[in-house]
Amino acid sequence: MLSKFITIEQALKKKTGEVSVRGWVYRERKHRDKVFIVLRDSTEIIQAVISDKSKAWKEANRITMESSVTLKGKLKQDKRAPTGYEIAVSELEIVGLAEPFPIGRDLSEEFLLDVRHLALRSRKLTASLKIRSTVLGVLHNYLRKQGFIEAEAPSFNEATSEGGSEVFELDYYGKKAFLTQSWQFYAENFIPALEKVYAMAPSFRAERSKTRRHLTEFWHCEVEKAWCNMDEMIKLGEECIIESVKAVLKSNKKELKILGVEDHLKKIKAPFPRITYEQAIKTLNKNGFRIKYGQDFGAREEKGIAKLHNNFVVVTNYPLEILKFYHGEDLKNPGTGTNFNFFAPDVGEVLDGSEREIDIEKIKKRLRKAKIDLGTSDWYLDSRRYGNVPHSGFGLGTERLVQWICKLDSIRDAIPFPRTPTRIHP
Ligand code: 4AD
Ligand code: MG
Image (spheres, rainbow, N blue to C red):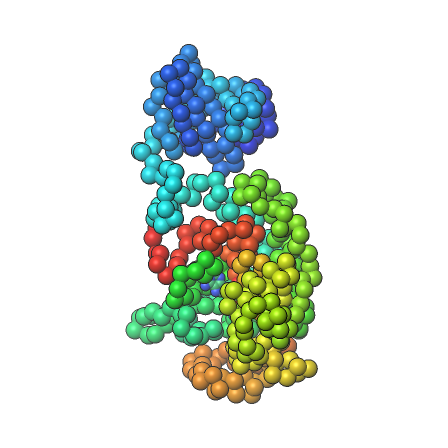
């Protein structure tokens, strides 16, 4: 019956004439002599009306919310319609008649997460998922354009690079194994082979508590580059964020409008203000926080620093005692690291990196001090034994970046199916 379908977005651009579209019934309202539907496809929504004079009248009265339909009709402008146009339907076919849809108004956050596979159809979630897609695409494209080679590492690991209690342990055919927390051990060993590498892959963290910015599985964009110092790596991190923002402003105008955000993206400029850990501590204490030198920042402090600058802020040179063994020491500022963190307003830490320690003796000393035994993962240090070179890298939490771009209340909406300590369904 129906021939050439166009998308709803194309129909809205066409403005007049006859169109055939297909999609899902987003809303429906039945009157005595008219049925109104709002049809949704992945591009847009449009109102359609079926009058009792139309031969589609009978079919229209069977329609339920979220049924899939194809329809044909004449376009006309209608200021009252949600996207300004309406289709006067002449032909209608229900492809999949939907059972009563469980999602209505005023449902709890938890219920919506229980039916996440259905909630994904909401305009806000599709908007943030489209923005997520733009961001991931940009990171791949930008890094490849800069000559980085995508090189993957396994998710099942014998050891963990980040350590701590936030590690998922599992049984691997009778052997103890862990889900990867970071690609870093592999990254540093790619250096002599590929020099400039990146990966986009899930990292796993057995976070203890549920927060608005932690997932137990997140997509980690990690970068490692040979012959590269801290300054260059910070610039690359800034570029990744600026390029993402530019692309979203260019390609996702509609989605930003649906989410009601945009202004904060236009304000962001690189280079980001850069301060040392010591300066950050002083600034925080001057502004009502209470934090001692040697303490790590929590969410409150991270967001606080960014808020005070009303921008992304790069904090460098943390005390070595609170850094991982692989971060380098800044010889100009002994006792502090050649490391950096990017803090975003409202989110806090989005990116974490460093110029790596390349002195194997210093690494061994720090491992001993931290009581870490690399065991069979001592192979990691071969990057220092066979063709050691200065190198730097970082890890960017893609959901944290999307959370900031979309101004999402929770990181959960920056990923289709969030995993948190209390959620593995659906
Ligand atoms: O700060 P992290 O733990 O650093 C590393 O894993 C380094 N090995 C990265 C590297 O140098 N290659 O994690 C990096 C980033 C954080 O800045 C944060 O944005 C994100 O990953 N992240 C999380 N995102 C969501 N949920 C969590 N539980 C996260 N933990 C870290
Ligand atoms: Mg970190």
